[in-house]
Image (cartoon, rainbow over all chains, first blue to last red):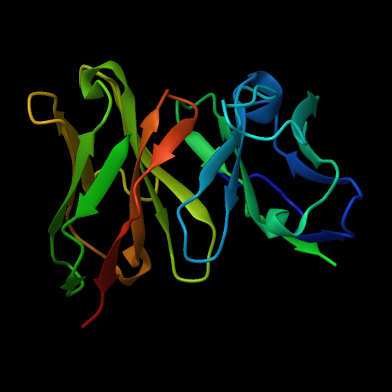
Length: 110
Length: 117
């Protein structure tokens, strides 16, 4: 159950777009369309942003989108806003019938 | 609205036991998978365990299998995590979350478990 690989940090200016990658294996990310993404602000519980690779829960801005190619999933945030500054985590179902998170990515809005 | 409230976190000595609870309201608890997730201080999220809506199917992370047990009482809209043989590395905020097997759409605010002598 190795953690999925995410960049430790990404940054962008307001209005720009950024992409956070999440790399796993054929036993998790590549094998299932069960990748989800969570946003966590300091001191708060995580919030679901994307599920099943690219679906958005009701109430989540359409500036957030998800995709997957092979063993790598991606979260793209367009039109960056100051409130998007947070930690982001990906998660995937695995062939062991477990779940695994990525190590997390700190997004800084410059 | 959906509300998940964890309780039971405490300071416990290595080798000790603790039982966490998660009280749910605002949704039909018995229809959903429930999951435990933890976050060590300053660290990332770690999936711990899920339990199917009727309690028949459970899964655990390697790091806790054999020491932790997840259960639920649908009549009481409650989820539980029995933690035995606790180690220093189990120190974390423990969250309960509802949703499906593979994603978690509502989270509680967490309860802190500290394992230290």
